[in-house]
Image: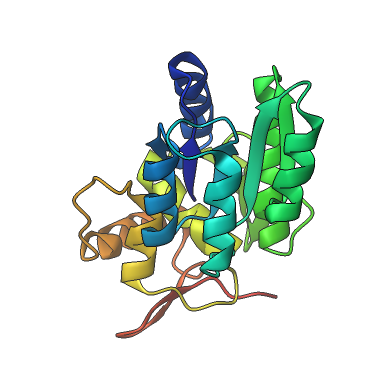
Length: 219
């Protein structure tokens, strides 16, 4: 799952990025509102974390621009503890959730997981199919109760397919959601990741629609 982190405080930004990456998220960073606005309009994200106090262009203005352009990606806003009016403005502008600074990083991670689950129409942090269990809280996978060692990109592919169960996902869409915006994206490598996942998790989990893409079927 791919997240845009819009935060101008270097230390906090690095902490959040490392936290989300440890859970198998792909994280792009924008340090000012202008860059955040551009990336949000041009890149396909599964979620955005948006600080309202960004330089150049404030977060509320950025969010309003996204919503005006029909960018419906879930947005969690960050704001100062005493800026209650900013929270109101952010929610009215189209935010899905908010957190006040300072906050505990584990809570932020939990809110991110909850937002992504709601987007997928899920309530549980676990995805399970055919003996394969993905625990989104720690990016761990088991097969019939036995831990399976997956690379970060294999986790990213599996997570995206699970979050979009029942929907056909093209190679291009998968590559857009497992690589950062400044990576060299090669949709042909997706087939390699799919083959590796099948060898580790069995051939029945991920279905191939020849020439169209991949799908994890719903029960």
